[in-house]
Image (cartoon, rainbow, N blue to C red; front, side, top):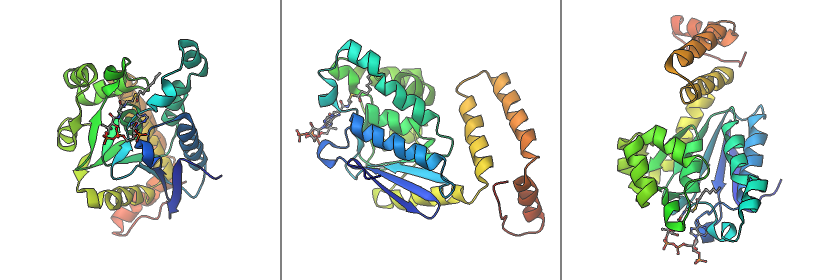
Length: 258
Ligand code: CO8
């Protein structure tokens, strides 16, 4: 499949998607998002891919949904197409891990896309924000919900109500990103993390992702119960036997995804 708005490559078991609409700072139009989802869904069921990285350019991860495309849309257009709803639902349904490697602007839908990934590694140049209020709307791809869960009510309210951005250091302090690295090292660090994940047992990785995501969907006691059930089920895998045997035998585990 040839794409117009994203670049796609693989490095061993890691799939890398680079958002590529440089003239509009990777503004997320329908075509780009369609291509992104298509590639994510393709890799989600491809045996050769074990972890996915999404990145943008040095200047922008993505400066938001495409304002020029959205401007003339009516309520009925938005309601009937439910396009942003599908973006949220289909990216949330990806079972393999996705890392966002963010440099420059991650605004509006760009910040929401980064938050839809499983964790964010940020360059020291990264800037996160939900400036939709300046456009007479609010976040619409999960931003009001995810930002509030990730950084707390006070910061989420301030950002969404005033449109103020966070720099990378504040994003790390607030728990929005897992860590900040020098911009020149962003891709190497993100790919290293992805390669490390790719060496684990893929089914165990997928179950771990699913279980952590339960924390946002349920009560503590139900989440712990879910964790226990999944944890017990891991003892039916060959990879649990191999991982623990390798530790005792002081060797590297050879996981077989079984
Ligand atoms: N959409 C369309 N075009 C954009 C966008 C965007 N979000 N962001 C930047 N561009 C374009 C600019 O129009 C400009 O194009 P041109 O050269 O043709 O004039 C080009 O990219 C470069 O941008 P600037 O000249 O503005 O670059 P600066 O370095 O001066 O500024 C900024 C960079 C601060 C990032 C600035 O471009 C900006 O403020 N962008 C808009 C940020 C924004 O408001 N994002 C939120 C968008 S709304 C959204 O994401 C809602 C998502 C959910 C909707 C769900 C509805 C149901």
